[in-house]
Every structure is written in structure tokens, then in C-alpha cells.
Length: 124
Image (cartoon, rainbow, N blue to C red; front, side, top):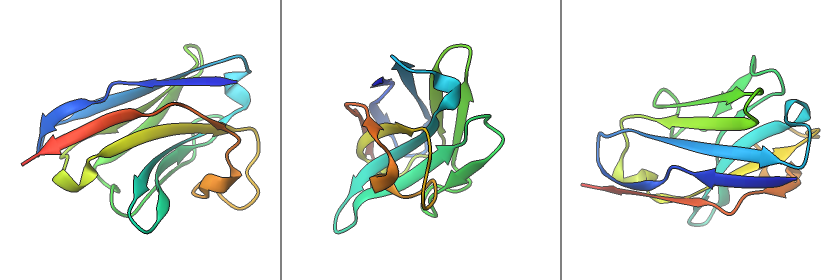
């Protein structure tokens, strides 16, 4: 399974961006999908996740109400719509995938497949 993330860029605080992650080499509709970003002292910070059908979503506290995760199983793609961006959202964003999740969607160690990351820079 290969993951290719894109959509990052440099924006100003308050702006929006949409990240995409295209999955190949596997059955996308069988995969749980998540987005993570590095955080100082936290390793990989959980951003958002979505289950196989798209009916269940979960968000990290720092992005709740501003970010929206969605998926299009026909396009093998998961999206992260990021609104009201803040300077502290600056990071490389990684998409991740797994078929099953032992502890919960927010645990990075439970994801088997990872993309290469896309840089998001938010300036003040």
C-alpha cells in the first residue's frame, strides 16, 4: 500500500487549505485513514481520522471545529480540509492507513502504512 499526500503550501493565518492523500496498491475501502503531524515532545500528534465507510470521524483537540476529514472511496482519496489556520498548525502533515485498529484511531503506532508528508506553513 502506497500513500501520496499533497496540497500543502504557505498561507496566512486564517486561511484555508485542503490536503489530499491518494492510496494505491490496496483496497481503499478496507482502510482506516488518519492524519498526523509532528509535535515537540509528543512525537506524532493526532490530527484526524476516519473509518472505512466515512461515517465515523475523530479529531485532535487542537483542530476540532476547524479541520474536517473526509474520504472518497471511488477516488481512493482521503481529504483534510483545514480552515481558520493558525501559526501553530505549521508542520509536515502525514497521512496514514491501516486495516484494523487495536486501540483507537488516534494512536499513530497502530497505523501500518504512511505517506511521505506534505508541508503546511502558516504565517502571521
